[in-house]
Length: 149
Image 1 (tube, rainbow, N blue to C red):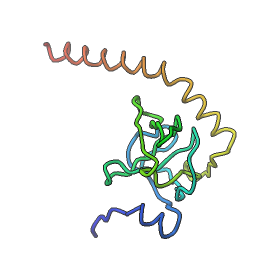
Image 2: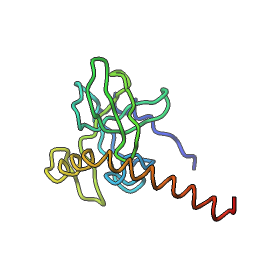
Image 3: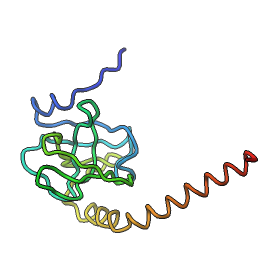
């Protein structure tokens, strides 16, 4: 059986909704790749900060990241597990996350526990980024020591 890549953009245009799993680590710990199921609906209006947008990168890759800021012509977006922001144009965004299933438990985007997670994740972004940089430098030094260089 061949692995056929689903054309989510066409599916959103025809059905208005996509339900499936994700690939990658950019939205961890919120969404675990290959396990958690996302429900994406076609974008019908401008998104707001904290919305999770589905957009196309280079007209070929689907990316699911959080809106941090709304600009005149698009959005500033970042994955929950990422450390750099992206500028995404309005017409690149094709859908918005309306709910997801965490180990089969449905999570709505207006759930109080979910909103606490989002605010906590954004609040700790800068300290997390700082400590990740230190960790990566220490790991690099440790590898050099182990290799004897």
